[in-house]
Image 1 (cartoon, rainbow, N blue to C red):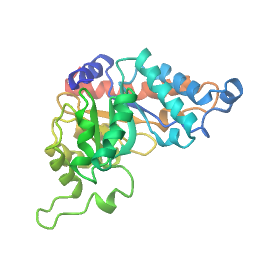
Image 2 (spheres, helix red, strand yellow; image 1 turned 180 degrees about the vertical axis):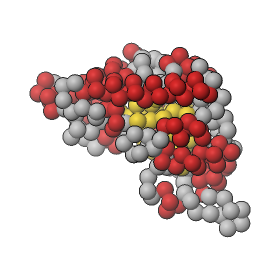
Image 3 (tube, rainbow, N blue to C red; image 1 turned 30 degrees about the vertical axis):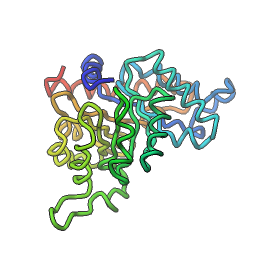
Length: 278
């Protein structure tokens, strides 16, 4: 998917919502296990069908699938195929946080872009250019590079200052990675709980898309993210996982998920309108 195609979807749906498919078998409504031998996949399908017209992206977090072995990988692949076949306009991110020496990264890239139909994969920048560049060899695919995360441990390394230039490490990551890709094949993870730092991020990458987790259950403010992060092509995908997919643990879980997604979409519509993007 191209940047322009993503922006067109955002304008058409009046939404920049990414729904995180962090499907935990311990949180799936219990009645699904009584009704089906394929409860995890049935849960994903119901959530997708309930929210597809309200969002522009889905982001399965691979940990929730890998944790149950081959069955989880099977569910992941079928989930991606289901989205691709039924809702082909959706942008699909593999939240895998990969990144290794070049030949290993090439195998990771083949996994998600060659064998599975993801649009993007989250990649850790710590090992440098040769660990990221194999992902950038696939036309029409994106690297979503970790830049400024929303977790408490972000302060352990990401805010270390360069004694000479005074830059934070996350700023160094942004500036250095500009040499690797461009705003047509690279976007950045910037946590919503660091919304005030988006001004510093935008000073370096004004035209790139940002994938922003942390809105909702983690306490990030959508209004603050939009205030500091929106650009002329929207430029942000805001991910919400738990708030939407676990809105109910009862038989109405899909309806509840839709209700929560619609609340977010309606707020996004207002923010896009205020920016003059729709």
